[in-house]
Amino acid sequence: MTRHAFDPQERDAVYRAIRERRDMRHFAAGEVPEEQLQRLLQAAHQAPSVGLMQPWRFVRISRQALRESIHQLVEQERLETARALGEREDEFMRLKVEGVLSCAELLVAALPPGREAHVFGRRTMPDMDLASVACAIQNLWLAARAEGLGLGWVSLFDPQALADLLALPAGARPVAVLCLGPVDAFYSRPMLEQEHWTEARPLDDMLFTDQWEER
Image (cartoon, one colour):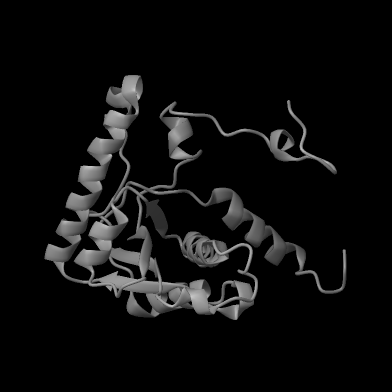
């Protein structure tokens, strides 16, 4: 343990937030106070980013009609995804995959236009802008869990249709619809495990030494 380490209680709290974070689909009544929302967004804004380009933009959805339009886009893609799953279509349709209409706050995370100007760290890996936005979302997720709020990442939408709906400028790209708000309870395990859709794999299956190992 180095002298820069947090004290044990602080350290345990960090690991607890990581361990108990869940991709939430079920939300309860209630609001997210403005001061609390700003704390969460500030946590997202403090994420690392390649070349310090900070390629995250957040659109806060305040109009109910717009929220309903986003829900329609998600529902359209849910049906398309179900059809693409073939024999698991009916099983997928029984899953709850979003909380767009029931969450207290709805946010859209997007990449801005003009990203090609940022070369530092992206010359051979241009998708590092997307990785940076993912870091910001994870910060938001962990901070929300520490504050007792649920967050769900919805990726079931046509990006161009959502970009048009939100009047994003040319070159911008929506990445995630984020449902945020109070919940009655956090899932004890990832929801897709609880619903027997899939099982999480252990770290040992994903950890190699020196070179890729086929197992």
